[in-house]
Each structure stands twice: as C-alpha cells, then as structure tokens.
Amino acid sequence: MIVLDGKATAQSIRTELKAEVAELTPKFGRAPGLAVILVGDDPASQVYVRNKERACTEVGINSFPHRLPAETTQQELEALIDQLNADVNVDGILLQLPVPKGLDSRRCLEQIRPDKDVDGFHPANMGRLAQGLPGFAPCTPAGVMELLRRYDLSTQGKHAVVVGRSNIVGRPLSIMLSQPGRFGDATVTLCHSRTPDLPEQCRQADFLFAAIGKPKFITCDMVKKGAVVVDVGINRVDDCLMGDCDYECIVDTASAMTPVPGGIGPMTIAMLMKNSVLAYKDHVGAK
Image (cartoon, rainbow, N blue to C red; front, side):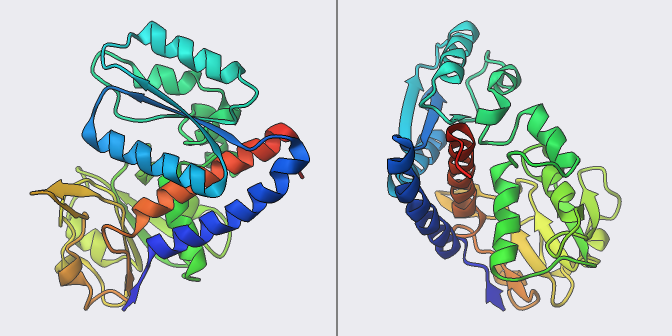
C-alpha cells in the first residue's frame, strides 16, 4: 500500500513557494501579507494559528496576527475586517473558526473581500468553483486534490464517494472531483447522515474520501479492495489524534491511503500559503 505522505508533500509545496516569494519580493517592493484573526482562547484554534504563522515565516509571507478576546463584539470584529480589507499590505484574510458563541461567522466570512478570501469560503469564490472559473478554492479539498496530483492518482472515469457534505470539505470536494481533467472527471456520490446503506455506497468507491468528523467511522468492511482512501478527519480522543477511518484495519485493503496525522492536515496549510501567494500576485500585478 502507498502511504500518501501529506507532510512531505506540503514541505515540497512550501519550498516551491518560498523560492517564488524570494524572487517576487524585491521586484514588487513587498512580501505577501496574510492577516490571521483569532477570537477567544480555544486551544485547538491556537495550535492551528501557530502552525499557519510558522508556515508564513518559512515561505516568506508577512503574517499580521490579530488575537482578540472572547468578549469581542460582532461590530468590533466587522470593523477589523473592514480595516484589513482596505489595507494594501494585506493580500489575504483568514478568520480562524470556530468563533465564540454570539458571533456570526457567516456574516464575517461574507464581509471579507473575495480577492482576499484565501480560505475560499466566500459565496463568490464558492460560486466560481461550482462554475469551473478561477478563484480561491477551500484549502482542505484543494489540498486533497493536490495530493492526488503529486502522487499521480487519476480520478478520471472512476467512482468517487465523499462521506460528509460540509461546505468546508465535502461539497467543494465533490465539485472538484466532477470537473473535467485527469484529476477530475469522476462519477461522484456525496453521502451524508441520511444516505441509505452507507457501507454499500462506500464499497462501490474507487476513491473514498472520509470527511464526517467521527473517529474510525470507516472500517475495512466498507472499503473495496484496491481503493484509494483519503481520510480528511482529525479527531482528538484521549489526547490522541485519529481520523475518520480505521487506518490499521484498512491498510491491507486499500491501494493508497493518507495517515492521520500527517495526511491532509499539512496539505491544508500548504494550500493556504499557495492561495496567499496567488492573492499577492494578483494584487501586485505579477504575471
């Protein structure tokens, strides 16, 4: 079985971006800028933000951190987003989710300018994705697709089953898999909590993508022999991280599989860096 090493692949992407940024920064007089907004003190969010800021440092992206107290009001948060929208040194804006109760994250995400929406969550970017137009794709499904490309695992003419229909992963991933191309052109089944006989749907997959948020939900009896299994889930159980798939059970059935940790998580951050550089190139007029 091939282990789809997201950690090593993400490192390669960051190295490529670092070289590109180093070449462009002197030419345009400034480095890319990414503003990261963290509201509250959620421990997991703090870890994610630190990892993103470290990636920025490695690539050569200026990181503008904004750590706000949990008591921050909707008005204060929206005022900050307006300020960052207008800042010419900020190419991308990331609002770390989840936000504390009482804040409307959807309103805030929609307030971010689409050309600075490096997370790819703005309705305008989601609409462009659905129509196959250029724009920022959500980082996690983009990371999934990039990992398939780097390992040359073509989905063309294959049956792909996506378990989970969130706007962050499942829905956009299903769109990407159905778009024309060697790493697209799949027949896609999007499964969810109301799907009848989910195990049978999974067993039909040539490519199985788990993004449901339930630890070890996908077991070996749900996987077809030789299938490619991509585990997007990251669940903390008794201080251990595990995916949505029972890795130890499935490794003898799958032809290729992502580990957790070390699979899609690093790819998500790598694609955030890539989107930030793309936004920068658009803003400074780099061709």
